[in-house]
Every structure is written in C-alpha cells, then in structure tokens.
Amino acid sequence: MSDALRIALVGNPNCGKTSLFNHLTGTRQKVANYAGVTVERKVGHFNLPSGKPVRVLDLPGTYSLNAASPDEAITRDVVQGKLAEEGQQDAFLCVVDATNLKLHLGLVLEMIELGRPMLLVLNMMDEARRRGMQINTQKLSERLGVPVVETVAVRRSGIENLMNALDQGKYALPHTELTGLKGDAHQKAETLLNDVVQYVDQEDKRSDFLDKVFLHPVLGLVSLAVMMFIIFQAVFAWAAPFMDGIETFFGRLGEVIGGSIAHPLLNSLVVDGIIAGAGGVVVFLPQILILFFFILVLEESGYLPRAAFLLDKLMFKAGLSGRAFIPLLSSFACAIPGIMATRSISDPRDRLTTIFVAPLMTCSARLPVYALLIAAFIPEQTVWGLFNLQGLVLFALYMAGILSALGVSFVLKFFQKDKSDHMLLMELPSYRFPDIKNVWIGLLDRARIFLKRVGGIIFALSILLWFLCTFPQPPEGATMPAIDYTFAGMLGHIMQPIFAPLGFNWQICIALIPAMAAREVVVAALGTIYALSGDEDAMADGLASIISSGGDLGWSLATGLSLLVWFIYAPHCLATLATVRRETASWKTVGFMTVYLFGLAYLMSFLTYQIASNLLA
Image (cartoon, rainbow, N blue to C red; front, side, top):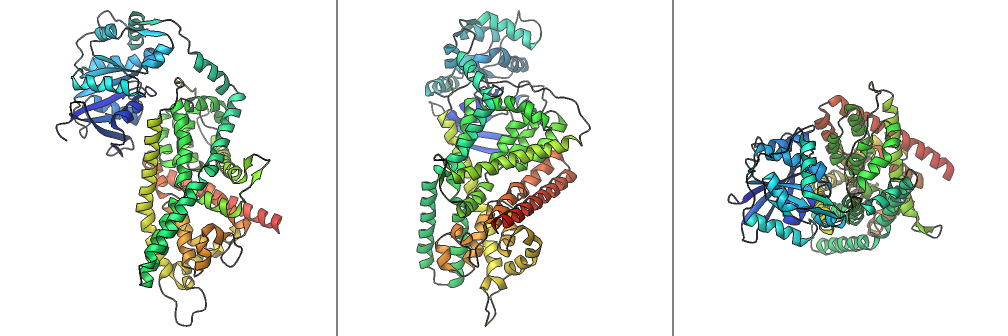
C-alpha cells in the first residue's frame, strides 16, 4: 500500500483522538510496540470516498512537544520526522476538544511553528454547542493559517466531513506567522480564544451536577464501591448462560472428534490434551468480556480520571499518588499494560511503588481460576434476598488484592528516602455517553488477545503437559492410576511435601509449573491432569465437579480457599516479570518483586488453610 495517503493523529489526552481513529478504521487496525521501547503504536487503514487508501497512525496523547515521558518522545519524534520506521507523514490531523480550546491550542501552536502539513480537527462540536459556545471556525482557520474541519467523533456525519476534507486535499502547510499574537503559547491561545469564541453560558451544568456526587468525599467513595460491587455481581450473573453454551460445545466437539480417532494415544492427545485444555480456558471468555465492558464504559464516560482524583488522598496515605489509579485499574485487565502505564507518573518513587503493587491487582488471567474454584466450592445461591453469593466472594477476592496493594505500598513508604509531598495535577474531561463503537472495538481486541493466548501459549503448554502426564507408560501389573508413573506424577510427588502445609495435593503442584507462563493455564493443566487420571465418568461432569466431590480426586474446602488466596499474590506470569525488567532496567527489582510476592502467597495461603481446616474440623 505504498500509494496510500499517510496521516497521523496528534492531540492532547482526552481530546477524542482514539475515538476518531476507531471510527475511521473500525477493526482494520493493528497494535504493536515501537522497536526498542514499550510504547504502543496503533496503525489502521481505511478508504476515502474516492477510493484512495489511507494509512492512519494514532500517536500517544501529549500536551506538548517538549517530551517528558517515552510516550511523548515518540509523538515528538514522529512529528519532527526523526523516527525512521515511520518516515515522513503526508499530513497531521491535529485533534482538539472544542470545549477545552484554551488547553488544547497550545499543542496546535507548537505544530504550526514546526511547519508540517496539517489539518485542524475541531472535535466534540456537539458538546460545545450544547454548552452555548459559538466558535467562528472560518476566522480560526484564517488566524492560524491552517484548514479547520468540525467533527463529532461519535457520529457518522462528523466523520464524513473529515473524510471529504482529506479527499479534497484540504490539509496544508501553515501560511501564517500568527501575526498579532504575542507572549507564550498560553497567552497566544487566550488571545485567539477572545477573537474567535463567544460564550453564551460557560458552565457545564451536567458535569457540575455529576461532580457534586462523584467527587464528594463520602458519596463519591460510596458510588465507586457500589459500581465495583455491581460489576462483580454481573460477571457471574450475566455470563452463566454463555459459559454453559461454550461448555456444551466443547463437550460435544470432544465426543465427535474423539469418536473418529481410533488410536488411543492420539485420541487422548486431541481430546484430553488439546480440546479439554483449550475448552477449559475459553469457557471463561464471557466473564472476561463482561469485566472489560464495564471498564471500557467507565473510561469512555470520563469517570476514570475523577476516580483517580477522588482516591488521591487515600492513596497518598498508603504511599501512592492518584496518578497510580489508572495504571492500577489497567492492571485489572493485565498487569503488563498497567506497568507500562506507570510511565505517566513523573515521580520515580511513586512510579516504582506502583510497579511493585500492580501485580496484586486481580488481572483477567486470574478470573478463570477464581471462576473455577468459586463454582466448585461456593454454592450458587442468593443471600439477603438480593446478592449472588458467588459474586460476593469474587468481589472479596478483588478487594483483598486492592487492600494488599495498599498495605504493601504503605510498608514500602517507610523505606523511601524521598519523603516529600507530590501534588496531583490532571485534566478532568467532560462527562459523555460512552461511544458504543469504541467499546465494541475494545471488546473485540480483548477477545482476540485472549483467544490468541489460548491458540498459542496455552495450546503449546497443553500438549507439553499431556506428554508429561502420559509418558512413561505404567509398567505391567501397575496398581496405581497411570499418571502416577509419568514424569508429571513423579515431579508432583517431589513438590507435594513443600506445599502440603498449604493443603495442595500433587495434582495442584504440577499445575502450578506451567501456570508460571500464564495464570489461566492452571485451569487447562488441571483439566488435562484429571482427564488422564482415569476417572472418565467424573470428568464428564466437569472439572469443578471433580475437585469438589470430596473423593480420592477431590479437594477440601480449605484447600480450595487456600488456592484462591495463593493466586491473589503469586506472580504466575513471566511476561509481567519481563516487563518489569524492561521498564526498570533492573534484575534486582525483578528479584525483589518475585521473592516478596511468592513469600506473601505462601504465608497467606498457609494461614488460610490452617485457619479454615481448624474451623471446619
């Protein structure tokens, strides 16, 4: 696509740039990291009405070209043409929030001074008009010396305006020296605003009303807790019918394919290794997508920065800053982007502390493990006539991770040399209705990433685990289940005494090893181990039924609770540890994190198992 028009989107955070990118490209976009750094590059493609192909690059948000972070440095280098892998762009679309021109025009003025071909995109024009703002776009274009187009990124009509402008080649080199504008960028922006904008009513009454609730020191915290509680109730209640359908599908798939494979070893590999392994993980996709749906809706609505602002005082007492909230919230999806997002924290002390506690947030990879164990040991019933008991337990697990993170950061605070206060400054965007297309694309991306893991690492580990659980074959006259004679059985029995104080049997010990690659692999691993343990009738009832049965293969309630607590803390994710190494350039940091997380996991699981065993005796 060498003849494609190459454009890049530039703008401040919260200007609607990514929403515009999603509407232009739809699902025709790819996300990868720039070479040598952990900054994401988002590239998409679309066609103009004339049929001309366009390659569009969504650059990281920045308030200035004077870079203060790796993200901003990438944007600066692309704009200045210094990044070889991106080359020169045909045009830059400078996206600004029409309701917040005073802040966003500073970057526009810097872009104009560079003299790059550009088109100014006035986004969120519907919101500006709702507030009574009258913007003379023609006069603004004349004063800046660049073409201006109005858009509403969440509506097709606004997108068509932009595409027609690109089709007609309206982007151009700035042809003005901003005559009459004196002072720094802030003063120039103020002069421009006085010239081109008229305010009928400067107040955003809707945002003001909502902020009285969501930023209230008491009501705000209560509403945040209620929202999180509802989310975790929905994860179980809404997902149940979809999960049942997936379980039925994989069960029948195993029967159909297994019935056509006569060779016993090949049959075992396909049915017990591949289908059981993949199916045991895919079944939790609905719960993961429901969790992500709520996170994306809160992000799109403009609520998340307010939650960060609200929690700043509480987090500061625990040794964190409000800026840590969004990286830690990202860690609920996956600790890797959460740790990468700490680059927005300028203070080294706060950044390192946030990196240390990010793995304690309950990432989506833990959800399959939690769901399996909760379904096995917690009855599906309603308590107090309203709440789902399984949802309450899931909520408690997430809260345990959060409280543990605050506790660890509080302890780390006493070992920090820098005891100074750090002020939180952040932009609070206007509230807006979530863009359904953005949410849909976000969910598709998450499903694609999850299924890619199933098709890649989990598929490979399931085959490896099947091999370890199948060979060597039992000798003649063997009396124990065949798996006891295999490599996995031998290893499990060696490890079992170490984990016996936690209530873990040798099957759990085996499953913990491949889980180091990815936490959710433990579910597939347990499925493979128990499928090869010789109890086919029990396996037909599902893994949850086997481990809760109380028989030779079953676990006690104390063991189930102990394993749940183990996964709150244990750093079962090599990719997370590799990201910490890359972000901190320190193996010492990685070593400290690994030791303290495994130490916490062992201690808390030990306490849980011993207390539960005594109470249930």
